[in-house]
Every structure is written in C-alpha cells, then in structure tokens.
Image 1: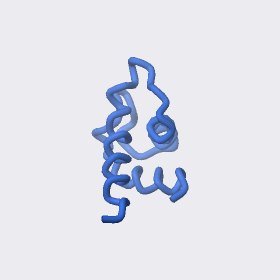
Image 2 (image 1 turned 45 degrees about the horizontal axis):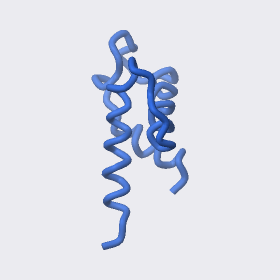
Image 3 (image 1 turned 90 degrees about the vertical axis):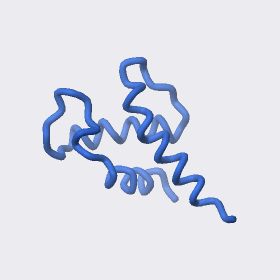
Length: 73
C-alpha cells in the first residue's frame, strides 16, 4: 500500500486528545500536516527531534501493528 494511503488509514484513528498542548480542539489542516510529518518520519525511519519524540510513538506503533497484521501466516 502507498504511504499516503497508509497515512489516511492512520489519521482516521487520531483523536483530538492525542495532539500537543495548544493545538485547536477540532480537526484542522494544521493538525493533519503535523501528523503527516510524524507518520512519514516513522514510515521512513527518520528520528524525530527530542521535543517531538513522544508524538512519534503513535505512528510507530500503528505501523508496527499494521505490518504485523499485513504479513501472510
């Protein structure tokens, strides 16, 4: 599956309470871009800056679960 398609699947699971403090309490393009960057960094194994590491965990765990479930048994 294409990375952008995977991101759209991941983004469906992002809740407003997962955002950093100060983000709007509604879905916005800024929020989507923030999570897109975190997701693509996780997808491409790019290490996040120290201040963003805690938000990098969600896409990393989501991708790990997706990859595990996508493997044929």
